[in-house]
Amino acid sequence: MIKNIKYLYLFILVCGCAPKTEIAKYGQHYQKFNDYKSLAEAVKLMPTDISTSEVKKILGDPIDNGFDYRYLVDSTGVNNCPVGAVFNIDQKGKITNRWIDEICE
Image (cartoon, rainbow, N blue to C red; front, side, top):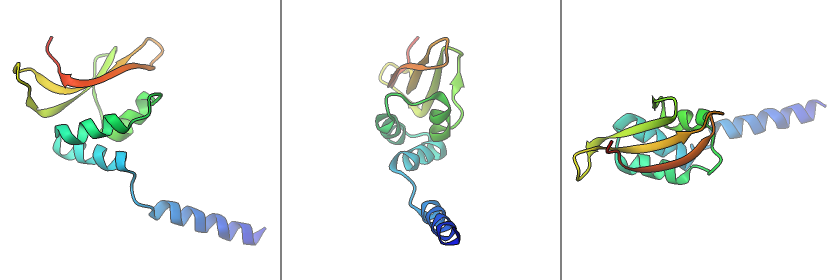
C-alpha cells in the first residue's frame, strides 16, 4: 500500500511539472495580448464538444450576451468592425457553433 502511495505522489508531481499544453499557451497569450493569432490558434485547437467553463478557463471571461460568448482582439477588420471569436450557446448552455472573424452587426 505504501509503495502505491509513493507512485501516486510521483505521478502527481510529474503531472504538475509537465509543460503547459499548446492550447493553454495560446489561451494565456491571448489573455495577455488580445491578439488574433493566439485567439485563432486556441479556438482551432479546442475540441468540438468543449464546454463553456472550459472555454473560460482557456480564454478568460468573455463578453457574455446570454446566447453567445465573444472574445475580441486588439484590432478591427476591413469593414471597421471588431474582430473576435463567437461561441453560440443554446438554452441548455451548450456551445452549438463557433467562429472567428469580423463581428459586424
